Length: 116
Length: 113
Image (cartoon, rainbow over all chains, first blue to last red; front, side):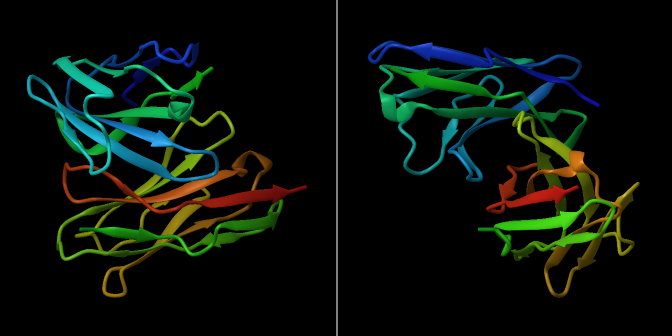
């Protein structure tokens, strides 16, 4: 199956700093990528949808200035958590739709962010 | 907007036995896709099985099968011959042809030896 690589898998940062998370589709072109946040023992909550070459669409309640999403190419989307605070600590997961078969999403391994 | 409901927060099953996880959804769409994802402790999302709404035949993948009842908007997952490696969170998800996935709240399955 298609592979989505998410990096880093774990990151610890200091409060007030910014952290960038990368999501790459390794063997297919992804016109659309999604970013989710998952709290412990809960489901995935969609944060935003990013389309290659255009601005991301954010879900209600998600601060677009805090969670910057860039989808500059068909294989890479990035999520930058700006001015991170302890409450931003969470598990972040990306997924990508295969351009040729856009009914199945492939998931990255996730990133555990801890803000201290 | 679509909603997906998993009414069983936790379930347990003895190894080698069969367990069924429930999922209901609400949509006004006629063409859509349904999925079951497994999330083991590693937290990697793994596709277990998928069902196209236009297909009447229930999907099967080895020990995993679904009971898709379109009129009732029900999509349950049956796991036969449960194995210890099946212990995980299971999420039911809905996709209306290329758009975002809508997930249910999840069911935590524990397979006991």
